[in-house]
Length: 211
Image (cartoon, rainbow, N blue to C red):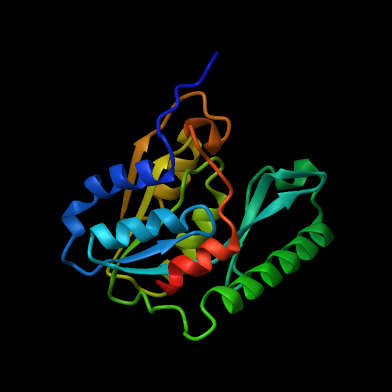
C-alpha cells in the first residue's frame, strides 16, 4: 500500500508546526533542534515564534549489524535510554558501552563544530520547544526530553510533524505538551511522509546557527 505524502519538505512541515505553536509567540521560547534534520525546521520556528534557536545533542544507539535500528539513545551528559528489546538484537553490555562511547564522541565533535564560541543556552525557567523532523522509535527524543527536564525548564514541549503511536506514547510521559501533526497507523520510516527529504549536512547546520 502506498503511503500518503504529508509534507512537501521540512520547511513545509515547520510552517505547519509553527501555526500550531503560535500561542508561544512573544514568550521568547527556546527552540531546540535535534541535529541534523531538525535544524532548518527549528530555525524557521524560532523566527516565527520570536524565540531563540539552539541545539539539543543526543544520538541514537544502533543495533549490532542493523545500524538503522535504534536500540536506545544517549544525551550529552551520558544519560542513556535503552529500549526494552535491546538485548534481543544481540546488544550485550560490552557492545552497548562501546556504542555509547562512539556516540558520545560524535556529540562532543558536533558541539565543538556547531557552537564553538559559546555554551549551550540554559533552558532553566524557559519555555522549551524540542523539534525533530519525525519520531520512528522515539528513542532520541526520549533522551533529549529526559536531559532537558533535569535542567528545570518552565514548560517542556515536544514538537514533531509526524510520529508513530508507540513513539508518542513514550514521549508523552516526559513532556508537558506534545504537538504532533500526524500519527499514521502504518508507520515505517520518517522519510516516507516527505516528498523531499534530503540529508542535512554539517555545513548547513553551522551556517544556520551562525546567521
